Image 1 (cartoon, rainbow, N blue to C red):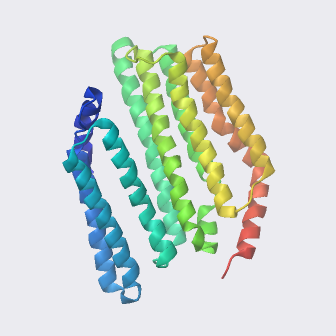
Image 2: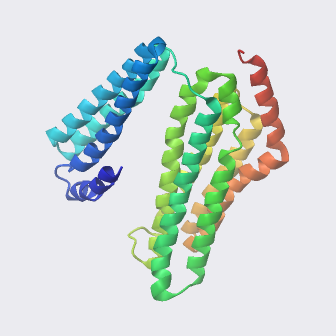
Image 3: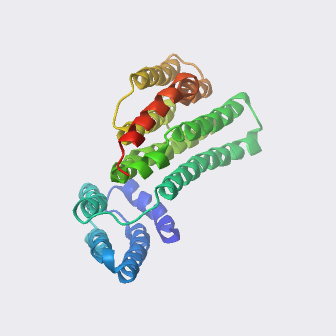
Length: 316
């Protein structure tokens, strides 16, 4: 991970120049991580003869993927070609587990432990967003001192982050995965847009801090959109995750999503009307609150019934 992180500055510098992508360090760091995983699958194959075919298939698919990434690094292509190749290799990486799980059968795993790991990664990603916002604001406060916008952005960022944390855990993932392990693939893959939205929200909050410092090229509307869009994707991903696990759609969720969309659209409209960007962030902070209030008042009963139906239908 350290190697990969060291490669990010030259990568973005090369993108800014618009010539060839300098992805050597990033690819090297990624391959080191994935090759370590290959070694673990080979070890598992040796220690679990009954599932050796599954473990070796994982090792082979991962190895093929790393050869592809190294090839992209060696080619040193132009920006459009590199993005095309990266998209292709990303598809290869994502298809590997799906092919193994659907063709070879599943390796053993503990549903409650896996659900906990995903939850902890969600918390870590949300925490990084707070760290970035506070670090940026602290630089401004050290020079200029506290002002209303700085306080509002800090409150909105922390309130939004805790709201996003809260609604992630309205989905009883561990119980549903334990009852029906065949939904593991959809559970895992549905977290990709969810994690991406968390990171993008943190980047948007960081951009808001830069806006207050007057170090941003984004205007007020652009800054608000940089937060509102990923927040909307994140909340939508939570409802998608719930729906994929219980395999049914709750009409009450439609109402909550509509109200959430209205809150986010309202924040953008306020920015367009000239309202302070910081105040617009306070409005965005209310978006997760729609789900929190809805589930606390009504939605939790719907969720309990949906889970009961799934647990009753699940194979033992």
